[in-house]
Amino acid sequence: QVQLVESGGGLVQAGGSLRLSCRASITIFSITMGWYRQAPGKQRELVAEIFTAGSTNYADSVKGRFTISRGNAKNTVYLQMNSLKPEDTGVYYCYTSTYSAWGQGTQVTVSS
Image (cartoon, rainbow, N blue to C red):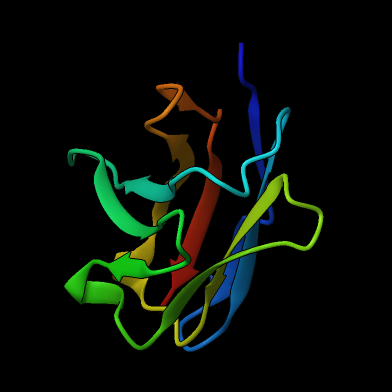
């Protein structure tokens, strides 16, 4: 069973930055990984994903502000979040469709 553990969430003022990390129990260098978020009272939504070949896809609401990348350790994926807005608040989850595995989530709160 694949385990994903997120970290790096916290409270930040609008305009600030955070970097989220997702550490997997397996090598994830060759599989698609994604970051999702869920705001209170809303459905979980895709934020960013990185594919096997390294190409990426972002939600329109975060394009130009967020960057997804893989770590050199081959079992880590990051989400660099800049110019944060209050509407970015939510629980952020790491996900792999290959193994249908979710992490436990990390809370991000952006104050205005």
